[in-house]
Image 1: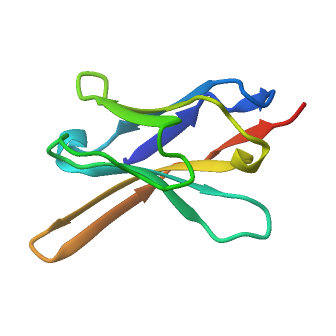
Image 2 (image 1 turned 30 degrees about the horizontal axis):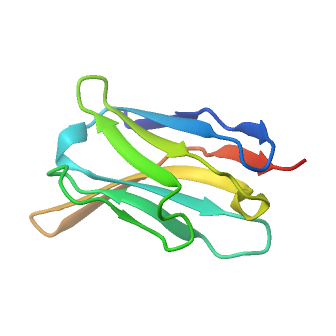
Length: 120
C-alpha cells in the first residue's frame, strides 16, 4: 500500500523556520521525483520544490528561492522541506508528491498535507 505521510507543519511567526517531513512507503522511493506543493485558500496549487530521482539539481519556485531547501534521505524514504525566513504569504497547506513514468505509465502519489500558518 502506497503512503506518503507529512508532518512538521504548524504556526510560526514571520521570520521563523519550520521543517516539513514526508515519509514514503509502498514504492521504491529512490526511483521517484519528489516534490512539495502548496495551496492556499482560494488559490491554485503551486509547485514549491523538486528533487529529481537522480538527486542532482533541485529546483524551486521563485517565491521561495534562497529560503526553502528540499532534501531526501533514501535510507529512511523521507523527503524534507526546510523553510526559513517564513513570510505570511507562505501560509498554505503543503503536500508531498511522488512521481515517475515507467514504460509509459504515470505513477503519481500524494500525501494528506500539513498546514503551515505564518502569523504574528
